[in-house]
Length: 318
Ligand SMILES: Nc1ncnc2c1ncn2[C@@H]1O[C@H](COP(=O)(O)OP(=O)(O)O)[C@@H](O)[C@H]1O
Ligand SMILES: [Mg+2]
Image 1 (cartoon, helix red, strand yellow):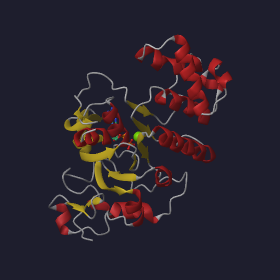
Image 2: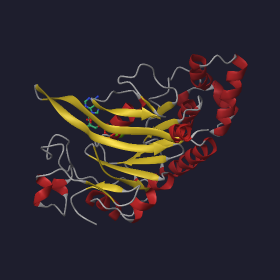
Image 3: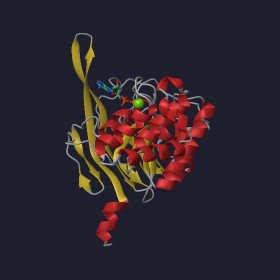
């Protein structure tokens, strides 16, 4: 295979300056709220990128933009070497998204057999027996008994339901899966099991994940790369080891000061997106930052690279 071929294959996803605003009602008026500002990152096949940030920071919106459930206002998404249209013409089957609440994403009137077989029916021309065989295989992989096929979603626990959702997301063998807080609605003991399982599938199938979480401990377990998002800005990104050992951005440092434990959400600073940052090109963390300096209110923070893989947006040096 040529080098170029390898590069395209190896580069799974590249985001270039994604921007997104929403109109929101404020009293009788509508106002535009900037939810994502110049979000850029790149991931390779087999990477697990942990996208970490507090509630309202734009994580789910970014996930939906990546899989094509929302469209960006500006910016480019390159998937396996190809720029994707916005809005998407077709939903790429090679990308799937799993949401936090498994019950909301399963049709309560359908048996598990129907739920799992549906993506195969719609998107392949496999025979019925082949479809049934694949469904059985995935039920095994997610460690649910074969009797589950004749049951309905409400007959399962939260953790089991999330396994069903995962089996459905994985059944077409996507290249990239956006997991949007997939374990947050579950008990801590179940979370650990499901994380192990997600790691197992990732390894056996060499999958690429974008793992969205507000919980650093969850991300630490799975991710080899981390991007930290604050008010729709990526403020720092790097390898997991770099971020956990040498966080550079003051916001990342604050997040990491509390030793993360499974199930404990990260600190929040009580922001609302429409206040405190008058100009979206300035540092979003300025008003909360303990190192705040005059320059922070004057100039956008530079992206400082401290290794080929690790960078952060801040005026403050080393
Ligand atoms: N469809 C929408 N219409 C208007 N505002 C939205 C919409 N979706 C998200 N938002 C707003 O965008 C911001 C980011 O939301 P979201 O991406 O869900 O953040 P997170 O997943 O990090 O909690 C929030 O202020 C939210 O209210
Ligand atoms: Mg969310």
